[in-house]
Image (tube, rainbow, N blue to C red; front, side):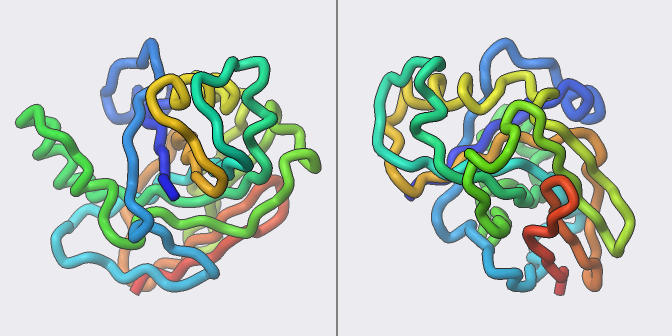
Length: 202
């Protein structure tokens, strides 16, 4: 299983981090050891002092494919949920300043939270609201219609370079509102009004 991730896929988030708006999807990956599911707690790592939540829509691949056309892309997606791409922002900034890859700030153990899966046919994929609460207050809110690159474009782009396989996951980027988390925080992820995960920071 591969966890594909898309960076800077919402204009407001790119602006809040002073990043340029990309002309093509920004792709990075996480290993399977990054997964955190079933509402398990997240243990704050000792290598960062500035851990940020990034709430995202996450899609599950339903079958293998390569060089997929955008018009056919949704045939390769079966489910959606919401999740968190945890980011060690201080480490990421140091890597970026040196022009280095920043996987160590994004792909560490349990940095990819996922919630309960929902079949895509049950939802308006191109107008899908999602949100993140921290300690019962909403801190992020997004809609799939605001993605710079929709999921169909992402599938087509990724499959140009990589064969996708059943069970692969695609994190599609975060809207504005990312901020730090602290030990004791409770994070809850929603699609529309349905809670799909909760995660305690320990």
